[in-house]
Image (cartoon, rainbow over all chains, first blue to last red; front, top):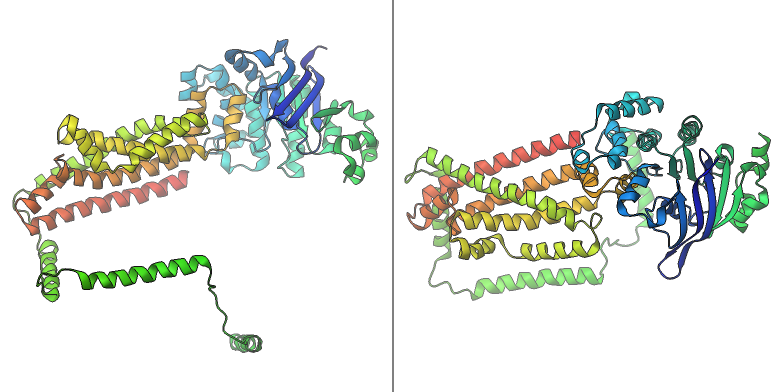
Length: 262
Length: 286
């Protein structure tokens, strides 16, 4: 097992006094399912966006697939981004386009500007899109417009758009935060499936600690921009959770013991 | 029966709780200012009517002859100096002028609109483009036509350039505002998959704002039709406007003006109907 992603001493400063991340270190192995948990405003989203440089980190280094993301040229950065799929809380689909068009958008990074502008896709690309949509259970909705779908379906289109990139890694920014428990479970099961069957590394921001503990191979706890826990979900203790969420975590609405028991 | 009962009980409930008149408007600073503005305007208009120099005109007579003129214009229209087909042809010339300037304006405005949208470029480029189109918009279309007439001479060329100029500035504002309404997450999502600027524009930005763009463009087309009529008269750009100018200030034929007005009205109503149908269709699909 080699480390696919290594984050070393990464800090991010917004303005002069807002420190979003300070000296973050962790590594992710190929094929791992890693959850990042922490209170709102702890820097989870910033950390995720630093990895594909949607936000530039202030210092440190981020090694993805033996390349330092921090000092890539524009062209190489685009190449790296095609290898990293991203999924969002609000799905971020183009509402007026169909499901299959939205799915094919994942391929834009690999196409020439003109082909992308005109929306010309090859037969193989279309077949792949249909296959992925079939796996995600969306084959009936291929020609529906994205805004006619339910939240859970939209998120599955978001996953399809990320998967068509043939990514090495998926970055998921709170993918289930706006979904009902049922759709959330479907999405999480799909993500775990993807990670297991396709060997794609998944790095996911979560608000639901119980979900994170249930699905992950590894948990990274963040508070005030610092990593306060980095390890297996099996060894996490009540004290660790308290350290991640601060003092008011005394009576959080879930029970760590119960999860370990099940 | 039941309703009556309810009414009486409601009255009984209300009566004891109404000791005095309830005001629904309170005297705040803004109502005082708006009311005093209205009163001052009313007083000024009354004063104006008393201070006009009427030059021994009899108001009653003037009003009557105006009505007579209007009656001649709209109830007895005729075509004397040109035929019906000629008038129809001239209307199409005016429509053509409006169409051409809207088309030129729309094509240029799409690209400038992309530069003017803050979420697609940076703040500096956006404010430079927005500032310059605001300046162009502040000057009326007629004035732009006359300015370009200095170089191109009075006529259709100056009218096309001047009207295009103003259409661009109008549409850049409309387009850039609809581009800016796009959720920035969508742009982020495509950027994260490695898509470049042009791909994002054509795959996300334009599809999302197409409905707005079409309805704004059509509105500008209607405006340009009205402006094209005026340009025919003021800048010699030809079309039905020029015939109207000839009828009114050369032949002094009120009845012909009436006939031309009906032509223009018919086209305007037609455009309006098309616009309504277009919008309905866009709403179904969009």
